[in-house]
Amino acid sequence: MKRLHVHVAVDDLAASITFYSTMFAAEPTVAKADYAKWMLDDPRVNFAISARGAAPGLNHLGVQVESGEELAEMNARLRKLDADVVEEMGTACCYARSDKYWATDPTGIAWETYHTLDSIPVFGHAEASASAGGCCVPEPAVARVSGCIPVKGRPAAGDCC
Image (cartoon, rainbow, N blue to C red):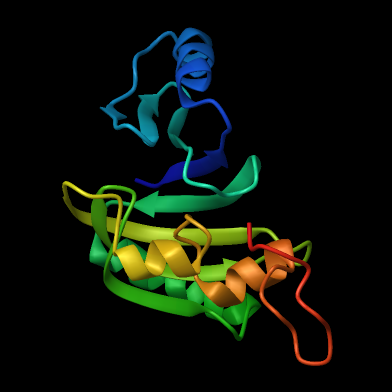
């Protein structure tokens, strides 16, 4: 069974945890110094927030699957829609190790489809977090979402995310 995933970048993690804990009537399933996640069944959603230097607001959306077979099915669907699907196998992000595929919708929103393999004690790889402005969205998707990655012939618009 699939679960909708929403990741929001926030300025004030503590205030946001209070807000979402009250809204969801549940404490976070995972709470770290820079990240919190609620694995809810009503509504069935994996809702995450992080304070890691990204611009506040929607970071990305996703679909969390429960098996490698479901992930392969989602990959096949994405590849029909987006020729630039980014594959990340065994990647470390958001205190988890996962297999992932990323695509970007027509309006520029990054969509992650992923199967979580295990939890890990750190947010992710230091070099990946630094290069993506503190978020786990791979560069091709970040570039389309925020415009922060320099595009040939256009100057950079400042700091990423």
